[in-house]
Length: 185
View (cartoon, rainbow, N blue to C red):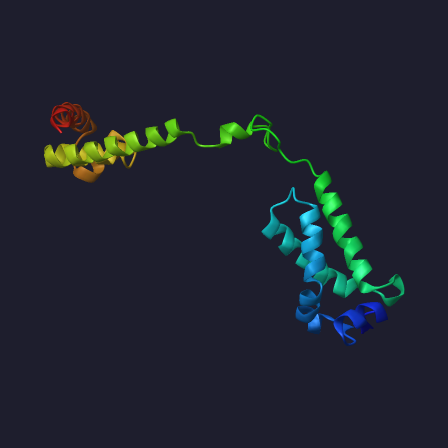
């Protein structure tokens, strides 16, 4: 077990052993150091940086050796070097930079036209489904099997006891009927 130095313990009012068992107390004691360090590196999102600093504190508790000086200095150096290294990582600064896949970041963001197209497509699908309900039931079933289940004319014929030629004729009639109904909705 490792104890805080005399200087650190006098600030706390008693001697605190640095172990994983009392990590909550240690975390509370070094919260000001964590907050001060995070504020120095304001380029990072604060809540995320605080969580990362807490993880470094836990790591420091496990790796601290008494011969390295005070725990506070050891932790301060670990935090500083961690955030300095993190600051060196390349972060996108422009929406026109390319990501790891070689695609510009702006191309990854859904635009309003994409959302509008999705909405229009969903409305069209609703209209088609309503139209399918209003046409001949057999033709409607054949159209659904063909276009929603991607079955061939032969497979549809086997399911419905029809010849592939009859299926093709019914598809053609069903599409004509569907177009007429679709126009009225």
